Amino acid sequence: MEKIIEFKEVSKEFNGNRVIENLNLTINKGEIFVMVGPSGSGKTTTMKMINGLTVPTDGNVYFKEQRIKDYDIKKMRWQMGYVLQQIALFPTMTVRQNIEVIPEMLGWEKEKRHARVDQLLAQVDLDPEEYRHRLPSELSGGEQQRIGILRALAASPEVILMDEPFSALDPISRTALQELVLKIHQDLKTTIVFVTHNMKEALKLGDRIAVMREGKVLQCDTPEQILAHPESDFIEAFFEEEGEIQADFISIGLLVEDGFYEEATAAETLPQISLSETLDQAYVLLADAEKLQIVDHTQQVIGHLTSKNVFQYLSQKKGGKTHVEV
Image (cartoon, rainbow, N blue to C red; front, side):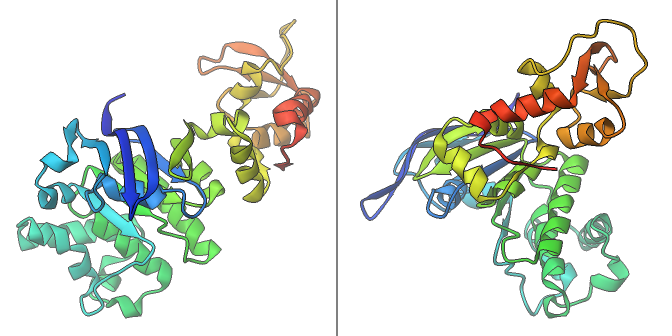
């Protein structure tokens, strides 16, 4: 895959205290890359090095294969949207004016700016006629954060940086905005770098997840692989602290990969489940069937899946320590 951001041997010290230690990391173009970990693990410092708000003590950060320090930082930041936990809309400016900030700085014509605002508002289900002239004080917290996201998207940047953007919101608003991020990513294919301390949020959003602790990346992989094969006791414990692992994150492909399925010995008419579907989908089907036919993306039969296979898999998974919510 084409890389867009890379950290090479990066360290960072503040007042003699090393907060990032020899970081090597690659972020691919078009992915949602999530950095997750407890407070003080170095997530935000790492993100701020991407847009030059923080400068490494050692090593280099690259954007499109050029060192950050070799860019005109102001112009480079125009290629990167930034969404913070503190929404920071300009209180005396309307929704339209807030969203237009970067396009206006870039010299866009008024008609183009206005059209872009209306397009973005409609894309996130906010009626332009109703919202474009409102002030931030007339919006709910969730609506303000939507406008913050649109402001970051307005000039079509190549990268969106999102630093704990939903942590101050209520659960309903947080869930709605997570869905919005997934929709925006599906529509625009923008590279998104997302910082959170919430493992479930990381699992829901990330194409890949970097688990951080004390300035180091302990594991960087897909959500499925981190769930199935955590590389340290800390990662396993971090999952458990965040609550029970949900079955909608574990694919049937992982069970097949680990050998928890039956050979298909005869042609039978059975309910089918694909390798990409998940355990919670299997539970629904197995409520009405003794076994399922596992098929790949070409509809070739791989084998059969039974309730026994599922429970055997869960029993052996990480020594039986994982609890799966169904």
